[in-house]
Amino acid sequence: MQRSEYQRKLKRWQWRILLAFGLLYFFYYFGRENIGFIIPLLRKEGNWSSAQLGMVSSALFWTYALGQLFWGRLSDKVGGRLLCALGGLLSMGLNWICSFATSAMALAISWGLNGLAQSMGWAPGNRLIANWWPPKQRGCAIGVVLSFTGVAVIAVWLFSSWIGTVQGWKGLFRIPVLPLGIMSVLYLVLVRDSPQQAGLLEEKESPRLKGEEESPEAGGFLPYLNLLRDYRFDLACLTAGAANFARYSFTVWIPLYYSEVGGLSLKKLALVCCAFPAGMAIGPSVAGWISDRFFRAKRYPVIAIFLSISATSTFILGFVSSLRLIVGGILLFCVGFCVYGLQGPIYALSADVAGRGQAGTAAGIMDSASYMVGALQGMIIGAILTSSGGNWRTVFALVAAVQLAGVAIACRIKR
Image (cartoon, rainbow, N blue to C red; front, side, top):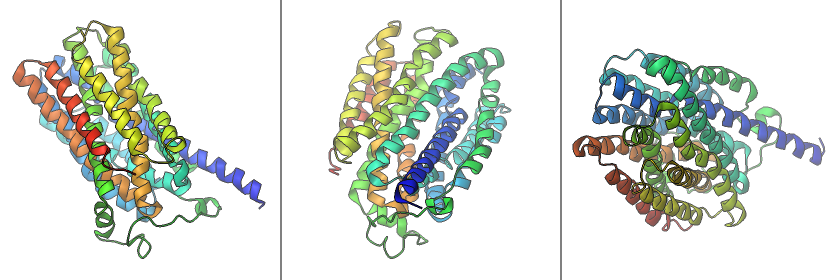
């Protein structure tokens, strides 16, 4: 095969893998972002407190975080194709189980199990991208996938306003996840774990971590220790946690904020709140491209700038009337664009630090750490709202402060 023909075939496969994973992960979000509109309906129909609903939403974050530690490492050994597809099928089934819950505890348990299934998608998918895309293009590639998820949140929230009105909260667990099951099966057909499996030569990538050249697929805790010994990776995990705290503070609670404080109907609620995922849909690709093109794959400046803008917008939003929907929509867009946009550079950074041989493990550890921090928002915000009688300004100020702490941490990465 001539060099030019080989390059064209490789490029086609790269985009096939990237788009297939992006579309699969798009539907993954139908199995967890539905909770944002389920919470207001449960509050009205089930008369559950904010503290109980915070416990339910947090259940997924804790199990998702724990699952990442295992699935990321397993994907380095067996590949990400099977794990991603299996996770999608399991998440579809567990969402249906959630729809039969009759108490907060039953829903928290089944929603937590869904978190384990959902955790089979991201780290194995990052391993897949690391196999197919070189470091100098990885920030943009991961940014494209993350943009799919931003569009997914828009789709979930728009459909949720209609499904919730017609089918109630049970329908929101059952209907949105059906395409996830279909795409999981198609994914198995379309995807290959590595260029070698597609009949192409695999380009070698230099090891990044001490010990990786001797045992890139070693068992036990060695891969985890290799990563955690790198202070840049540890700081990146903390920064990702601050961003996730803010991101899920908005996706979980912002519909309830506009429902309770603004008194908006479910349909108006969806239109206003969709400004946030609209920003999410654009931010990752832009941030990933900027870090690759203008900062020569140095990720931390983009991360710090984006998180600073998000923190400022968050704080201002807390002092803007909930009835000023245009201003609120602009601020929500800015937060979504920035707080999710930095995810592209930060996960590219995890692969840069780890190298291809441990990319899945690195993504798993980072996602696990970030979701452990993200899980705190459910309990903390739920407790604040319950104890204060709905003091939302305190909530927005807290979320802004967490993001500013993330900025301070990001500035110390220096990579």
